[in-house]
Length: 324
Image 1 (cartoon, rainbow, N blue to C red):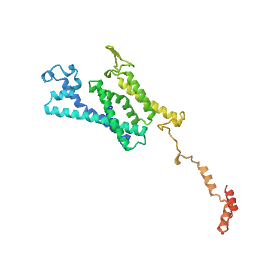
Image 2 (cartoon, rainbow, N blue to C red):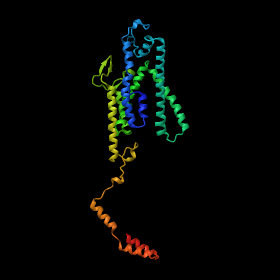
Image 3 (cartoon, helix red, strand yellow):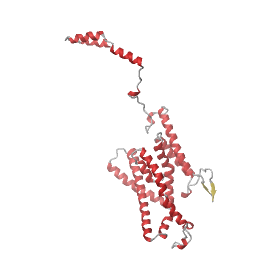
Image 4 (cartoon, rainbow, N blue to C red):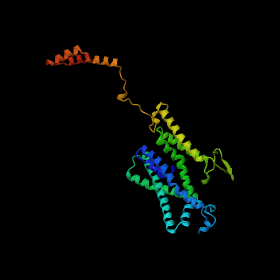
C-alpha cells in the first residue's frame, strides 16, 4: 500500500498531520483485510486441475501466463455472468487508476512546478492551457513506455518500485520528523535515484552495477538476492534526515549566508515580553522608589503654571534641560 498513488493522494491532501498519521494506521489494518481475496483466488488457481476446464493443459504458470491468473480464473472457473461482472470491475478499476495517475501527474506539474516556480503570475486561462498540454504530454509518455514491455505487471511493479524507494521515504519523513526540509528532499531524490539505478532491475533490462551481499551470476546476468529495494528506500530516508539536519545547523549557525536559504529553514529568534529579563526583588524596589521620589523643581514649575502664568520659549528650553 505504501506505493499506491491513491494512498499518497489521501495522505498529502489531509487536513492536518494528525489526520495523515491516522490514515496510515487505518490503511495498515484495512490493506491486510483487502489482501485476503487475492490470496484465496491465487490458492484456488494453484490447486485447480486446468485439464478439466476449457483452458486445458498445461497450467497458466507453465505457459507463462501467471500474470493473467485473475481474468483466467474468472473466465474458466466461474459462471458467465460472474465472469462478465468481474472482468468489467477489473477494467473499471484499471481505467480509474489510470485516470487518477494522469490527473495527479498533471496537477503536480501545473500547480507545484509551473505555477509556484516557473510562472507565479500565470493567469487562470494560461493554467487551463498548461493543464491541457500536460495531460497530452503525460498520456503520450505513458503510452510510449508500454512499447518497451509486453507485460502490464512489469509497469505496475516499476511504478510501485519508484514510489517505494523515492516517494515513501519523503512521506514518512514529513509526517514523523519535524526536521525535514527541502534541502534534504532534493539531496535524497538525487542520491536515492542514483542508488536505485546502480542496484539494477532485470525486468526492464537495467544491469546490476552495485552488488549487495548475496548477489549471484545467473546465465551471465547478475541477480540481486538481498532486499535491494528496501536498502534503496532506507538510504533515501537516511539521506533526507541527514541533509535536512545539516542544512538547519549550517544556516542557524551562520556557516552559510542567509541569502542562500531558498527554503527558509533558518529560525529567526524573537524575544517575546514573557522572555524579557526580569529584575530581582531588590532591584524592583529600588526602581519603584526612584519613580516615586518627588522632583522639587518640577513641583515649583507646576505651581507656576497652575497660577495662570505664561511660559516663554526660554522657559520651555529650561524645563527640557532640567528633565534631562
